Image (cartoon, rainbow, N blue to C red):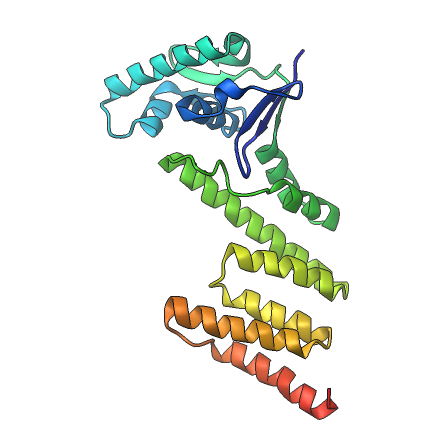
Length: 242
């Protein structure tokens, strides 16, 4: 039986036995395949799919659009009927078909509590879900996965800090900062990690970045907690003469 691979993070790619299917790399056909893959092997009613794909159309028109989309899918992918179970009421991936989904693998690894699992999740998250594609249902899932990625990075930073691996923790804290530059807690994590590494230049750099970003984007100064942390390391440096 042929193996199917769906890579949806950081791009969109469908492959069969390692060979990319270029004809399925754009448009609503790609969205439909992704929609069903992201359904976690659950049957989805045609009415629900039709509404999510054509929210501004009448139910009758949306269902007609879905039938046309399924026709186009079968035209481009003759083996579609072996992959999809299509009834008058719902659509579902056939469970017997071997399918690899990077989203499913990411979500599984993201639930882990060990560094190997979390490293695996961070590696799998190559970017946002299907960049360049637009749909309300897709945006909701995109945001959910981005939040899970942020939580993965937070867990990695916490575990590495507890093990005294500060430079490695800094690397993942900077990734977390790329996810959300307005999250002040991340700047404090970076300041603390640099301070624990006796890197006052890093503390200053993180603090100044926090001041600049918060002022530019939100028109506010860092919180008192952030200022106190900075002053703590500055005073410690003065006391030790470093």
